[in-house]
Image 1 (cartoon, rainbow, N blue to C red):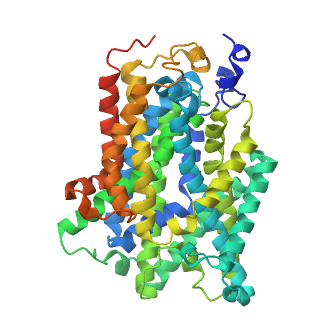
Image 2 (cartoon, rainbow, N blue to C red):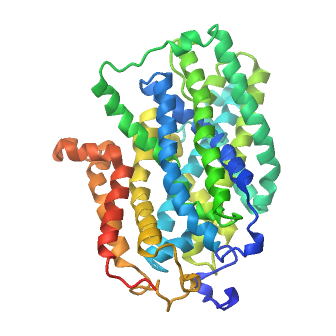
Image 3 (cartoon, rainbow, N blue to C red):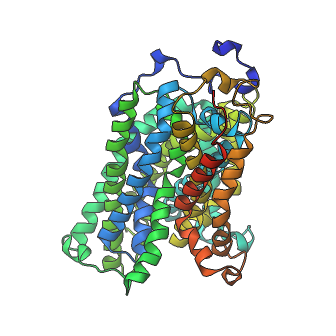
Length: 484
């Protein structure tokens, strides 16, 4: 069946398989992709938040490296189908969840992307605020217009909304308009990071005072109580991309291109940028007497107005480029999967932007505990089970063989029961349930004493637990199903 003969309700230009002649990405393309994706403010904050949480420099860097080495495995595995068949993530999910059931993982992944969009937009908007306030001091004294429970001051809210509208304007103009900003980011953000590293080493008179700082943990039990949730958070940082990586590998020349490219680009670049974040954050404790884990707050401590302004503009522009590339493209595809004939890229981008506002991103990154223990771990408990199901389905149940045309048909083998594979849904619920008590306790909805202590601690391993349980349950439930 040719693409134009597929049932239109299940396909669109964005969701159709990429033709073989258009699969032109090589090793360098994937290496460059991950270097660009890794060099962002949340990566810096990821590592520096570990210092704020009590780790010393090598513990923090090692935790970041281990997390990225672990998530690289499902990243490569899920990328295989994209490279082999040229299909995006929402379509691949149809093989395991059904042609309609695939909307469940697609929407969950899209909602997480909306959260990341909101976080990046807040970072960019707050950078603008830090710049404007040194030239317009009255921004600091604007009357409060939001409820106290929102934890949102008027000045930052104004620049946040301005930056949000700029993002939406780029969506309206199309992703091609961001190409020049991506080039700008590729040069400016690494230079800015190296400049911060130079400042940190210079002001503390060498790396010695920084590297000699000890961990704040008094015992190994204290350390591991922080380490394992932190490691889950590190895995969770790219748990989104470990699912929708087919959106990128569908353009690969061959399997080798994305496997080697990702191996070279992901863990090393994340670890290097994290190292810079760790060194600079550790230096702030020596220079200012307190740990400053947010680079925007750090830059605002400098005295030269022009230097602050240039730094904030650079952060805002590079954040804009990252936001469109990393947090708009994939959720736009996911929302399009709901109704391919009615929701195009622009509409999907607008939906992402609106949800990104409603998630209150300033609360998610207000402190390290919220960033790691609430945001990163919480969504990893949802995405881990999806990854386990998809990998078992593709590699074990279907032996890497898919009937591509049936992925776009209501009368094919992926129709299951009215478009939904109940076995995948049951396995997903089994993977998520053990993490619910810990999540409810973490966000203070219930008292943790309501549940056994061991069940609360399961949440610290949410991605691993969810992945393993859902994968096992799906394998058992699908044991006797006919796959072709």
